[in-house]
Image (tube, rainbow, N blue to C red; front, side, top):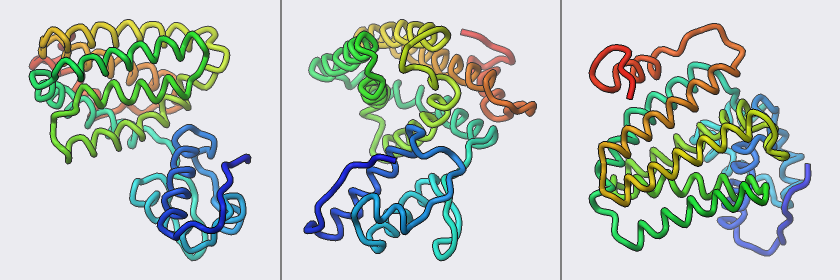
Length: 252
């Protein structure tokens, strides 16, 4: 596995940050697949750092829920499963609309311009088949819509976003390098939804933007569930979707 290289003269804190950032990115984008057993010796060699900062980086990844196991024996990348996915989307469907309702009234012109730039950035990334750039702008757009919800909420939403990205990349966008077939169609629909959400945010239409967001999340939820090889039914997220307008099986 090819990794970025680093020199050996930087302080330990920088080495920890480097290892954490590199490994976290590779876990989130699937370069290091779910279930991979991690060799600390191999990782330290590949990253060109000692095992001390590596172990601290791995502890941070364990705190993020991205790795698990015994630090003295074997660590592995956490698996993807229905229960975890259900909890992630139940939390997002519950919290993000509230965060949007709190944020949109406070958005100024400069922030609206930034949101527009993120949507334009996604368009450009799709045109150039640059999925890393697309993911970066996608993340910034969604978190920007919740920017004034508070530090604790913002941190939680960022964490939920990163975990949900693992599922999207694994089950929906595995073939996006050529943007063919279903992936291309999904991304086109997703972009149309982003534009609608952007216009609602700029117009200060909190109800419409929150409703569009829930529909956006629900579409992704259902698309991932359709791809997962699991006969169980999600409990939390499904309940929230069915009752999201205050009545059973309500749809926007």
